[in-house]
Image (cartoon, rainbow, N blue to C red; front, side, top):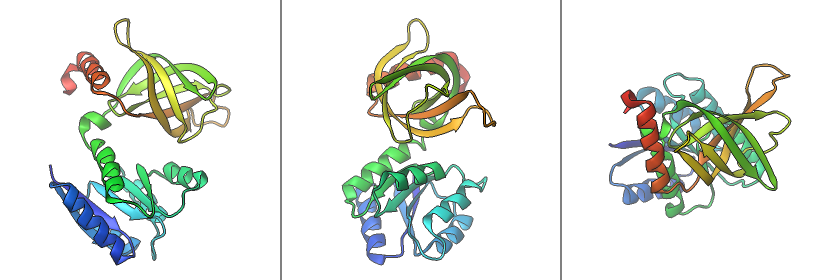
Length: 240
């Protein structure tokens, strides 16, 4: 599969560095370049991209505005987006994740670091990684010294969605967690690591009793992935 990527940055040296680096790392990647957000927007209306690598401080239309435009466009809302930024404060990064980025990279960066981010993100382009399946079951997550138990809503090979009582749910976006998951008597997972990528109310009301956490897996080994895939194939045999 040819991965079509667009790098949007107003500095030519960054565009050249990124393009040459990615083409050197990946044989199956095609990289186009845009000098500002408006130019990137125009290119995206003419060509379908799998991945956008975008400077957050772009001129004309900045990275945040470009991302919001993408997420509100039905044809582009699932396109992966890696943010390039010179800011490393948590508040800035949390805001970017809330806006819908898939990953981020702090400037200055190395090609090795960028390549790893691309690998992590391109994995999500695999249907098996992005597909989610409705599954019910208890789940316990731990963050800091706190442990809470809730209900699984759906799961895939990339992560899962669960709900907890609002009073119990005190973790934040980007917080790392460990969790125990039970998908049936013979399918349990213990002390797996992940991090929170989205938090939302379970109901569209100010007094919603439950909070949803979207959690992405971290460093899931081949054995866990194989067991989970085996389970999903058993429950949803026509989806594979």
